[in-house]
Image 1 (cartoon, one colour):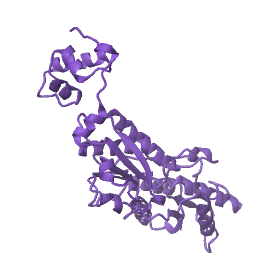
Image 2 (tube, helix red, strand yellow; image 1 turned 30 degrees about the vertical axis):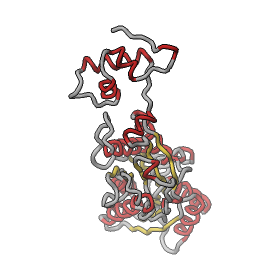
Image 3 (cartoon, helix red, strand yellow; image 1 turned 90 degrees about the horizontal axis):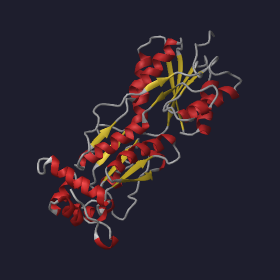
Image 4 (tube, helix red, strand yellow; image 1 turned 45 degrees about the vertical axis):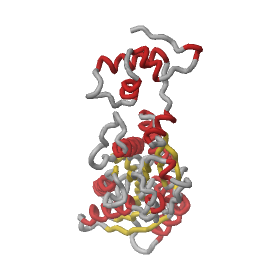
Length: 345
């Protein structure tokens, strides 16, 4: 095949590619748009791709998107921009989006409670779809009203407004925590529970109650806490100083809460884990920055972002996108220095 550079140093067009490959512009459009299978032979598709590569052809995405009625932009709504977990979710989503010529706009809904306002004069005009991670009920009502495809991550699978869900097996994560602590001999527990009213935290609480409820001598008290270190320090201090036998294990909904709990233990003149064991959830960088390092549940943040974007692309019927994973994504307990055998007293 002989190729010829477009005259005058101009940017090559689809017409130039068609001429070089000896095919029609319609065939070029089918091949480079990923819609050629069953309509164009493998050999012809190869000729078109080779010609495009030799000419340095790049499709005019703006014009193509206008024809398709798409912006090739997705919105990712998260509870906070400062939380490392959501940064990793964004990274996973953006990586998959880039593979298909899409962009991802990151948008916070304060505390996951919201309400998250429509960030555009018209979300329908500016976006192709929405991905929302770990949001509280009702926080997305305004965006849902835009009638865009909505993929929910780490959220209630019974939500009728979402077109697809991708969840983490957070219930199993909390069961792993309970089994780990029970195996170390702990029987007096405090659940330092996030005060954010979201599905994921409700699932964690229910799983912990069920796991410990199956052990006759186990005692569990739930203490709500703001989702920050200062709030956790105060809540854990109240739990440790309450009348009656002191709890030997603090089970925290998040590594941030666990960091506050560890501070509370030390401020009372106690030791982690000799006097009180502490567990977290998420496996943020913080988990290995504190001393002792946190026993926590590792969540595959990048993967849930990737699967969320994959699910949205499937809803949009984007060529060459693969089906999303089925079932909840597995999570893993990572035992570290913040847990140990229950004290004898």
